[in-house]
Length: 137
Figure 1 (cartoon, rainbow, N blue to C red):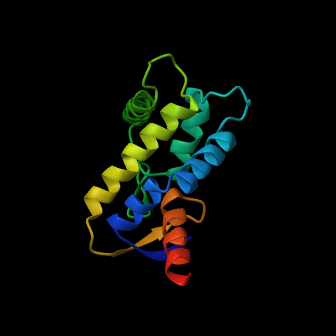
Figure 2: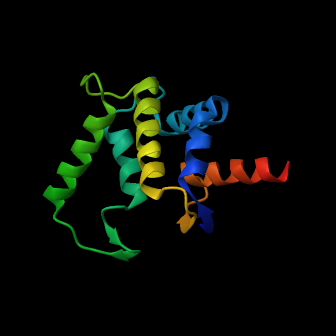
Figure 3: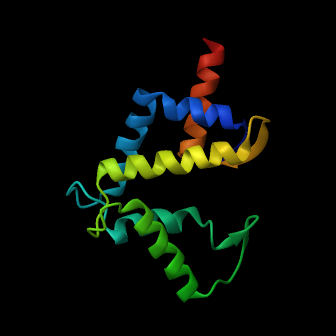
């Protein structure tokens, strides 16, 4: 993890760079698709949701959540990705929903930079790294 400066413009710029964004989407999708069938099942994507620990912590402190409530949240998230409701997420669905979520984060952040603690392999960290490369070039 590292502390980085991030703003909405950095995220928008990353998402709009189709080569960089699509490359990262493809890599992440391939890593999540553990059975290599070209689709993300509920269990495959659930592991990713759980690894983020967004709902199990509050400002980094573990919080006991109702397991039924967590299951409903994860079900709802999966449904957001599974646009055609066929029980699996294909690469295009994954890309579209990830893009939508990142643009929503950019909109929420606005254009004033904030410091954030980012996971090394996260989409946001990749956006910051891309922006730094542009500035240093």
